[in-house]
Amino acid sequence: MKIQVYSAHPFEKIYFEKWNTQGHQFRFTPASLSLETIDQAQGCEGVACFVADTLNQEIIQKLSEMGIRLIALRSAGYDYVDRVASKAAGITIAHVPAYSPQAVAEFAVGLILAVNRKIVKASLQGLNYDFSLEGLLGFNLHEKTIGIIGTGHIGTAFAKIMKGFGSHLLASDPVQNPVCSELGVRYVPLEELLRMSDVVSLHCPLTESTAHLLGRCQFLQMKPGALLINTGRGGLIDTAALVEVLESGHLGGAGLDVYEKEKGLFFKNHQGNPPQDPLFSELQKLPGVVITPHQAFLTQEAVSNIVETTVANVTAFEKGKAINLVVV
Ligand code: NAD
Image 1 (tube, protein in one colour):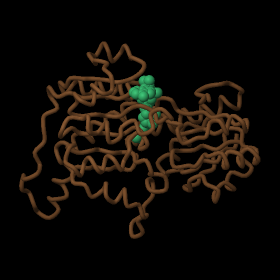
Image 2: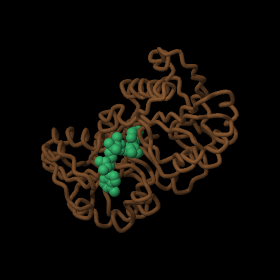
Image 3: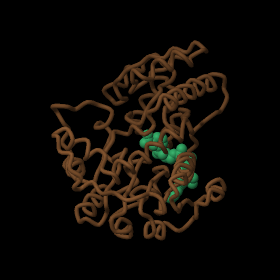
Image 4: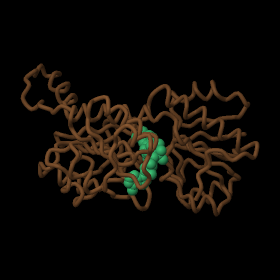
């Protein structure tokens, strides 16, 4: 099949060469899919997309008119796709359900350590030969309570790591995962999790019902000095409310790999010409905040698995098989 790969990164191409044993024609562009770049998919039967791409009703309608039959997502989450419009247009959507939950879980732990132990702050101070210890005090994770929101693939991998730290584990998820229960994770209502946890980490998908799952009211329910980690999706939290609560000093800090208005911001070098986003600027300036550009997935193993599954999804679609389909 002929597939236009949008938002293609150089680090992905070697894996496409490795896994494309079926002779598909993958055409790569670093541009993200938008009305301006949609013509690049002319002559293709499918597009391979990533979270930076726009897949709204208008774009999907145009893709359909161009003869696109498959949207192969190179991501687990599919919150950025208008699935109803795809169904109406007769376009199949496939995704990569679990490529390496460990990659994201390990990064979430990295963010906890970076925020709690002030690793970024210390490193930046060191550039000016400031090796004083003032302002670098953290807390042990041993015997502390970690609240996990969403115990699917990534939340479970995260729970396993945090168990190794000797932390107490609480979780909130409408579906209890027996693997987590066996690990000693205790399922509690969200309100109790927020009240009890020293660190809250988000691992649920962004849906209509989880949009702004955590807002001002929920942040104020959290323990004073607690940390918030978000490697899920930016829209899970009300960022303006988070800024307000961080500024008030109620929370101890936040490690954010995702941001609700990250489209057009992340995955690009804006040095010298930063986009105007007052909320993001405010968030960035807060001392207890570490922001990374949606890179939690970015390990060799995960990228290889993403591409392997994407190629397999294209092959399956070509053969009329239904694997890894996103259903409406
Ligand atoms: P998964 O489908 O395996 O697990 C999601 C879990 O969330 C499920 O157990 C589900 O029951 C639970 N859930 C749904 N609604 C909930 C709610 N209201 N409260 C609590 N739990 C709820 O998904 P996964 O593979 O673990 O991935 C989780 C999310 O992580 C993805 O949807 C994606 O948005 C995000 N993600 C981010 C990156 C990154 O690089 N930052 C990479 C991959 C995935």
